[in-house]
Length: 121
Image 1 (cartoon, rainbow, N blue to C red):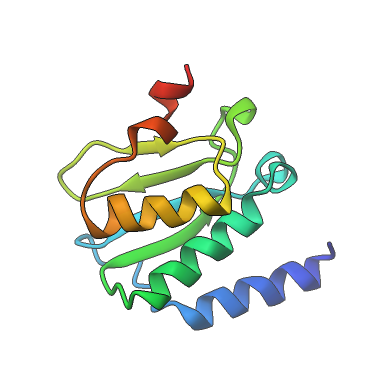
Image 2 (image 1 turned 135 degrees about the vertical axis):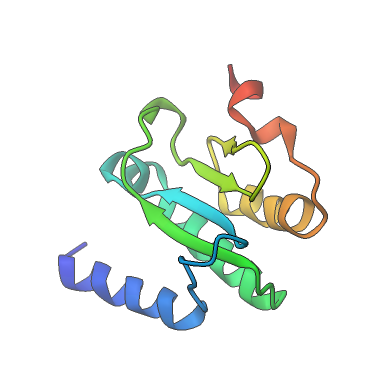
């Protein structure tokens, strides 16, 4: 994929989301999008997260891309950072798992333990 195509995807995602990174009260969802994450399938995971959050009209969630998280063998990786709570790291993510993380964790507050790094180890 070319740099121009990646920029178009980024712009499309940003146009769909009301990104308010400066708001400390937002839940932040980080998707590892370094070459290791992209090669492992992070792009469809990112797109699914954005689509599900938009479909549910969730306003307090910011989805952003990040570089290498450092545990490439577990890519695609999604981290959920909620104010006042411990970070949750989801590993070996798929679009189907992303749908469940949105419904169970982001909507209902229940961490999907089976998808976390603790379960993978």
